[in-house]
Image (tube, rainbow, N blue to C red):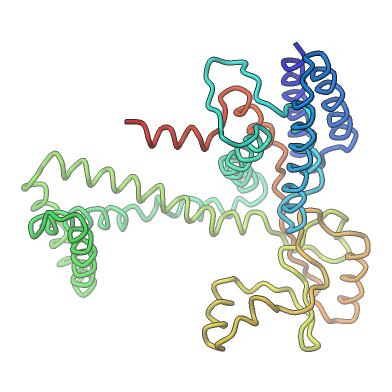
Length: 372
């Protein structure tokens, strides 16, 4: 009875936390602390009733472990304090998986870790939904960029045809899998190199000829292969564009220093180096190039003295006063790049639901992959 009550409370708590985090950007302390206390009390009572002291001991170990892991994510700036407290409270409330459905996929690690992992995995589709919501509501100019992969369908179709042609040519020369892959890469490179040198109409004629040839060799198989690769590349192109460009632009805004509020998150760390104060906006790729050029890893391990770190906890009153001072002294432009914090509460709600209804996503995937 008590385990079922704990699960129901967990669903209600995570739902309200998701709503609160999405609407107001905060998971109330009253909610998390009361859930933590309630979980400890209910499960202690359950352990006493069942004369199962190891249950109680393990629960306390799970709660401590979850807090330590979540605090690490807080420390590196990935999660807010509310996320840490909510996941810790859930570890106290539901320390073990209680089967409420016939579908059960268990993991070799404790159930609270299943909740964390499922929540992180659930963040991906939620991030797509949240970013798309921001694009259509606040940044409609990004809609064109969002649909860019669809507008480039011709290039993707040509790539699909060339890949299928290269695979066919490779199979003609060898049936050894490794050699076939190498030859496919070589043929793909050579065909693209050849096509790139041609004029527009000649290029079109060559592509049509290649298409006719591969459809003539194996009509059904190659047609299905072209369609399959085309759809795969289109989806990959969309996701790559979405997560590298759209998410970055949609979730960042320029804010004047006088409009800054506590809890806003800097897009980049504010650092001081060689007497200069600046935002460390250089991408990791550029830093790696700089390291290779200089022959040392200084740009990565020592970007400068960090004055304000970009963390999910956001700016404090002290941080805002420092920024105001630096802008006033003209050491910074009055244009602070702020990133919107992704409310993790909804992902925790989805992750918790999946955990109590179906089980562990990672274990389910591994079972599916290994299924004979």
